[in-house]
Image 1 (tube, rainbow, N blue to C red):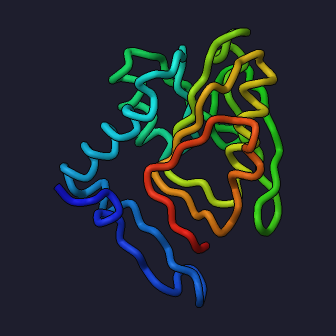
Image 2 (cartoon, helix red, strand yellow):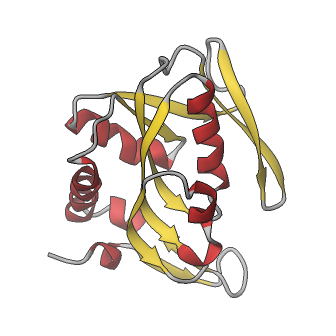
Image 3 (cartoon, rainbow, N blue to C red):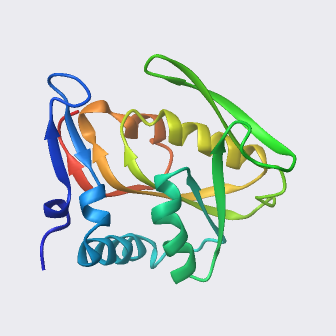
Length: 174
């Protein structure tokens, strides 16, 4: 069996010179790679007591839903502003060039629920930090945060230092 990072395609100088883009579409297109990824995410949660999985669009959906399914847990989508039909809570957060807003349904997390966040990538940690704020604003408790990949050079873990964070693949650079 291949190592998980062997399924990830590295594209130099995208989106700009000096950046190595870590492309998960090659992992998704390989049945063994996808299966291994979902199993490995599950392994990081085998001893975690949790009630619900939360994932941001779109790649958090890809990885979070099968994890929720395998553990027979609910899945809560985090969406960009204006995409959810019912009453929402929202949080604004900073991007590299500007800001954005994330939302989730106001009734998606019940007070006291134990929440796992699943996403494909931790870079600067800003998106995940915003998701944590949403969950906690509804009384949820984040018990674990799981990523497929981590760009350690961007120091995203520092924003999440009070949480249990795991990544399956860690790239030292940016």
